[in-house]
Length: 635
Ligand code: PRX
Image (tube, rainbow, N blue to C red; front, side, top):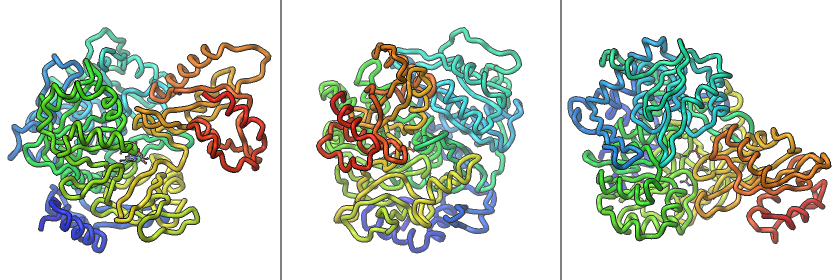
């Protein structure tokens, strides 16, 4: 029996049991048989959640790009590794073979070295979904530089915060980006960000939209001529298993975004293993994940997981609505996509267009449909199943997080019977626990609580860059000796998990995690604002949208609320990015507060969701009178 590729349910249970009873020998066997090591490990797992310290495959030496590229060259050299589909359908798709990827990554790696980047240096990658994004990620990994990809939709302020937090020496970007019918001046955003980043010495610029841009002498360099001159052979830096591979920022409930640090060996083993099984990838399949590489889904399931398995992975530059809402299906038909992985928000937006648009396309190549990023509602699940999967492609509703590195709870297609809105069973090696508010584990089925994980898995993030204490407090302090996910979940009568959503102040809008505190900080910067509180409310397409309650300073002036709304959303766009704009803004005379001065968000959430009949106990409020006023003026 191969533990690497699970093909039926009985096998899942057997392998799962083994992975729980003997985790070390289980992962050791997977690691030994399916990856290339320069030196084997001295120990498989060392861990202590109280510190917390976790290391997998300690003592091992490897380079992840040898696993993702070099080792495929003899058997898959001419196979397409990355299939790039440009923003505009008339632009020809680019098939980058493993041979070509090898050369391009090595050239890029040599350019990085030539520009003074060494093992352990941080490189910020702010590049749209063009091949240079995946290639620069791999080039960093080739030489042991730590990449920090920042989604190219973040604003200059958000970019600067991330660059400074991890002290990046270099930024890689492009002259601009195409996004549907729009072009975006990325380099301009980088220039603005760098006004407050003294750590950056060099900016490498890829050409994409061919506009005239400002190039700062001595700092900014066009990538193409440097690549042209560079050798296409670059010996891989031999890394320790626990050397950091990358930093990726995610929003927390409060404060700065958290730079989650993922290390090399465990991340590689787990993303490769989960990719193979969660998508049942077979040698000639074409796999497409619609995420952006700026998020963890893109890191793990566009780049590392697929390439470690020698897969063909599609990278799409554009958006689902351009040039029309048939674009996703056009791409599926054109490239005969077999596995399709997207987010519920995209499914809902496409469902809204009706089914006529789908009928023009041949979707018969599809075998597996994936969903990730937020709970998928029942209606969207059925729409996806019926209209895209034609009821023959299983839907894998995969639950995981930036922090977990890889898929944690998910059906295995053709193995696990699916159930709408349920992420179903834990992945191999994953030990979930549901906890009550007093810290007791809820045993048995038909229980609901806070979702924790009891035992380490290979791709758990090891720390928060520069702030191990925050890592400990955020994930390991709520429940003794357990990783706390921040999500609530229930376990049904057969042991299937359903994720019910965040239990903290993170709101997921269109699949993007947004912390309320940074948005409130941005709003409070407006000179007319006294204070604000943000909550989520249900939205047809975005899943959740943002509702802001804003109290203005009492200056005796009358304000034009429409202008204020525009100004406030502009501030949010400048500080964070357009994804954090508010859908609704209500100007209030005050915010409901507890006697200790904490804003009672529970009440505000109910009002925003139109559930004012069940406000619960408001007697502990300091200022009960504002509640009725807020209800009366709710939007
Ligand atoms: O609340 C959960 C939700 O997204 C959060 C993690 O977000 P992020 O770190 O950006 O990673 C997203 C992609 C892996 C989780 O804490 N989430 C993710 N997948 C699901 C989900 N909620 C319900 N069902 C899912 N399948």
